Image 1 (cartoon, rainbow, N blue to C red):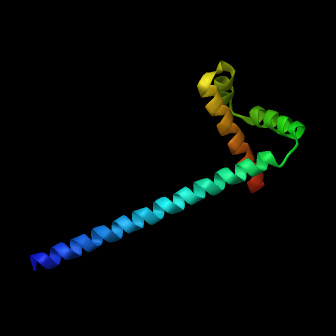
Image 2: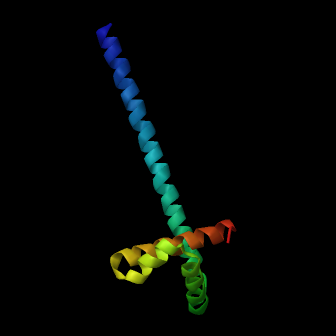
Length: 96
């Protein structure tokens, strides 16, 4: 009985491990697809259009994001990237 219970517990643990690995792989694929879509969005336009839309994205950013952008530095760079990614995703989803 104890060996049977241990075997069932081990089987449950293996199934859970496999489920978590599947979830991790799906999340990784989703993130990769998201990044590819963003890259394609910005890469498909002329430099002039990109500059115009980047300005539009920054203008649509919230006041907190704009204040971070004004301060400069690495936090501003990360904020700019996030603002541009969000803008691209909204455009791709048709919500801009």
